[in-house]
Image (cartoon, rainbow, N blue to C red):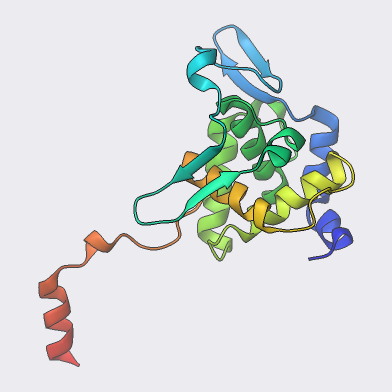
Length: 184
């Protein structure tokens, strides 16, 4: 998808992000809290992302962010990962408010619903949202390779379960397979 096509596809979300910014918002008993890049929830030492930052699910490859990419997206803490997931959710689901619904719980639920109902569940939409965020909001895209965006999409998925790639194997038993074979 070319830049103009992405800008047209994500127009509503881009306008909302330009109006509200890239901070993460949380509703609390104190009111609406805003978390800027580098913020943390409770314990800065525990919430700082390791260098290099890698994630892995059992039986799947490891995904690692390079330092240039981390600097570009200002990814230093767990809050920063949620800030980025928020921006992707806004872009993909055409979120335009109200600002009271601009919370991780609501946005991530909307994104999961979208990914379940309208997506091919590979993370392609999240990758396109990240590329659009990079070349539209952050300025001209520095990285031409899309693999880093793909890795970041998977890292967001592993951390926040934004989409599900395949059905769980535990739903099937050996007896079910034997019965199916006899019937065919």
